[in-house]
Image (cartoon, rainbow, N blue to C red; front, side, top):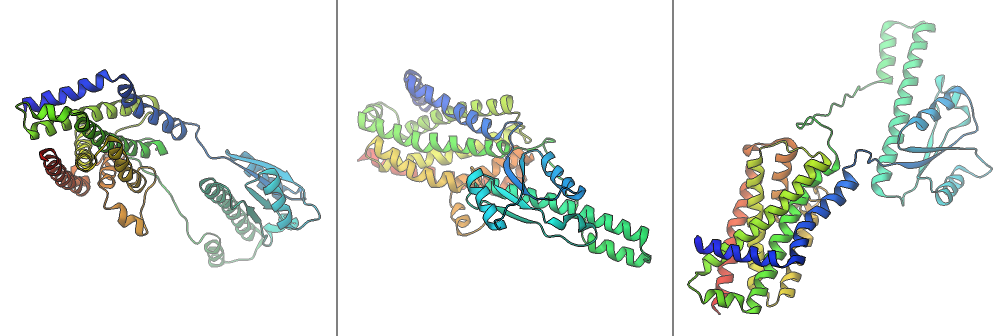
Length: 392
């Protein structure tokens, strides 16, 4: 163990003297946290869009609906008058030439909706950003549905006041207007409103573990072998196991420093709350480090140059980065089953459970033990292949 710690100290001292590398290792998580935190973690972060309302009516009912859209935060509303062209032609012109995401047409007889029915048509830009488009369509539909329900309730009140209806008939009319009353109540174990950055922080930790563990370990070990450093170390009375253990401890310390920096920025600057136990989060992170370091060891036993090791690391990192739920969840389709082969998927799931939901060990037992099993297996394979390579 003492010899392993000496090897570990050598690795840390080597990084300390490489100021550019040291700066990169420190700034890497810092820059990512600031960029993603600023984009997705700000209090004022909201999606907004431009919308045109086309009508030639100025009755109270039309004005009321327009005012609801105008007062809604995030919608930039412009009222337009219809021309001689058709609805389709006018909508196409407004979307293409004036960059409106949606165009809503209110019919001339809209004021009669209290006594009959009315049809509202909405055209939208299919080429717009899919997230903005989905939110826009959902928001417009929600406002119109709520307005429609208010009108239905007014019709029922008028029927009660002026109509010669029985209680059973009134109840039947109410059931038609409101067949289902939905109540949505959000619950957060962290007692605060969650933003996208809250979900992203565990993914950023996973990404830091992945890049440092896989690419960093693989490249540095191959570079040591190419420069002859490894041969000089092995010529001393130090076992290969001690060398590998020392290198692994060194990279665990390096990655740990990166994660501490990332979490400090997340908590202090962007008010991220860690709902679960710190020791449990640390256990998941350590298992994740061992998984990625094991992959790095395996790559270093195959690659002949540091550049080759870096390329092999990227070949593994990029699919794992996008298919392990770091930026977005993968919950269906054949890619979901592919994602279950990546250890980072389980590490990410365990970290999110602890950080966001305050999960206990029983809640993360499955992803934790899957990750631990992979870590043990890949570490054994990596060590065996590396020792075999060093003996050649």
